[in-house]
Length: 367
Image 1 (cartoon, rainbow, N blue to C red):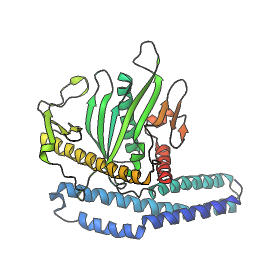
Image 2: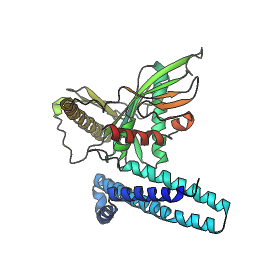
Image 3: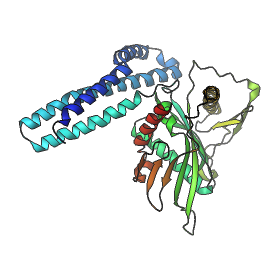
């Protein structure tokens, strides 16, 4: 890299990070941090476990965000010093390390910049992610399970807590559907760009003739409702069924009818939960998912009305949003952003940051 480029890169990074600090409003976040610390120190905080979890989760998130920005600011301020020391000592190894740190800081600033693009009404919410197998038979069920692993590995890589609410296993292999709750702020804004149909092409491990198979799975992402939301659901619009939880192959998970399935009769929306041990807990979890699905349904209806008034369909992504090809070549390609990679193993192991970040930028540009 020519030396003349260094001041320009540092100036651009300084400008970008300064804009990020302004958008995130770090002073306001520090005020919020003090308020949350005061709430968390109240002796009877855990008398209301739901509120306590909300407070501690939010506290942890705000602490992390402030630490992330301040650490990045310190690293950026140190970069010119690293170059000055390396050039002063005429040390090629130290100069290479300085450029490596500059590249690392550049990537970290770009990643943080994406967060500032999450300004939608529900973007800062936690999220429910549902995955359903589509066309493709047993391969599609296996593909749905592969996607479930991909997204839960993505959460683990980012240290995002999550909880699987319900899994419906297929008879031969894989899953018919699964829903999990990502318990971190901005989970909805981040993961909502993953919504759509995911297509897999590979040699089927379930075909004894080794033929190529194309299968599909659908990903749905909805925001978690909060106390300020109001979705009225009359009791006579709900049908609640209880049944015995089961795992792969029909093996009993417990011996009581603790699993709960709730059907919203007017819309036909069905949710279920079987991960808790008691029927009461499963019913509460299922109702939380139902509330979120109805909130998202209302949001989409309102958006459809606005789009109809504007005559604007630019926000529609179409049905299929990403292809994963494992044979005859290796490639994952996003059909909206054109981002692609040949490292399919890494993607299926949860390394989807490039796709998520590009999706967020694409959404902002097409909004």
